[in-house]
Length: 57
Image 1 (cartoon, rainbow, N blue to C red):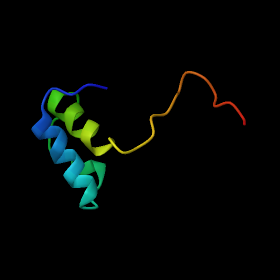
Image 2 (image 1 turned 120 degrees about the horizontal axis):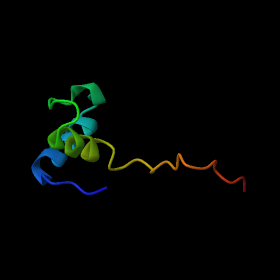
Image 3 (image 1 turned 180 degrees about the vertical axis):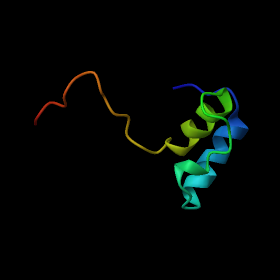
């Protein structure tokens, strides 16, 4: 996913590294800043595919 504000994205990344919950997002739900903050917060997580089941290896 792309982000608009690198500064806000880095705030989310810093919050996760500091051990804060994703509920620490200070931006209004549905806003671009909220999405950017969450993008940073989840940047190190594996993207999940929800449109089909994972294949068994």
